[in-house]
Length: 203
Image (tube, rainbow, N blue to C red):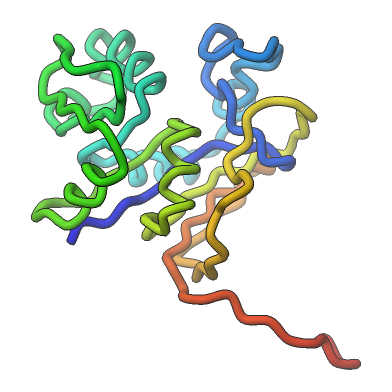
């Protein structure tokens, strides 16, 4: 069975919309596209190393909007992300069935995703693809989370977690705080959510 890893840039208030640039996603009059850029320009070497590790070549599972953004950009910038042209790009869409971007495969629904997850092969990495990520959370298909949290709040925009997300606990795999306050945190599934009553002694 293949692991599904959801990797996202988010703000402190959970916004994930248009982290890469002003024109990336302006839906609902979003005005803050490119909010990660100033932080990456000042990122330290350790952060770059961790980002390179997280972007090692692996098959991608993308929603249609993110797929279209990637297909328009990466074929002419493949030197920035080595291996992006060689991996399989799985696009989940009810309307899109073909593309000139090499190694693209199109899925129609959650059942197709489940069959893909149960097949032989390497990890499947989800980047962006907010609607797809929420569908994966609702159907309990996420094995790992890689969250890069930036020290800003936007007060508007699409958020990573929405109503319908199944309660699940996660266990920390690794974490890093950059010199400019961005946290890189990786989690794996940890089972069911446990509850209780906090006693007088918290620590």
